[in-house]
Length: 341
Image (cartoon, rainbow, N blue to C red; front, side, top):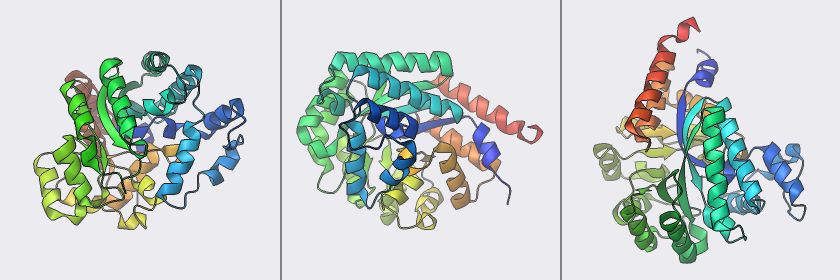
């Protein structure tokens, strides 16, 4: 079989489901841990591999929140954001919608205006210096309840930074029903933000229906259980509602038992618009290039199939039409000249 890794490495890409703190590389996590020695997070990048070994989804959330606790100052926020963009540039990611959880920072004492200024300064620098266009999704940490929902909606609507395009809901799904968040999504949607909640990763398809019917979801984060409901799959395909699929993440959090059992094949066969994403890449020992290689194996794709997959993400993004056309043209030009490369 052709080694597709060189093609994937150079392929221009967009990413739609990737978390701000969860994208911190071991080098950056270790640097932040050294700044804040009261944390239990290792300061040795090598030791982080063991620290990021998860027993289940609940353990993942516990470890994730310990890394969140390292982001304590606006300078931490700016450093993290720009370095995430640097790692994206190395993978030829041209555009990313980065999921940011401002409540996690503001409740730890970071001034809300300083937080917004830090991510915006990093966003502008990333585009100017690295050629990576960043946009924000502000998400509710579901485990923190309605207080977090109220605060996230207020920050999104009242302090809306220029890069903000969408409103989401993350964290555990079990015991965190989606309908309770409807008022906050209604407020965000009324303000012109897109709805992109996580749903159906560790729960059944009803959670996805709830996200669609109660939260007005335009894309679904994960949606792993959608294949359990043929009616839901048909609905997603008919209405062109994309799924943000994160294969290695689903394996790491035990949402799927084995990559070969991942339902992405059934999603594609049903005609659903599938995008491939990395979620929290360093925590899962992965990156977007690796996720494309996994998808190529699972879906038996060649170079043109991978290019089409990359175009799916562009289509499903909230980038403006001119920006979409620019990246699609770049993907087509790259693919057309690939043998010569």
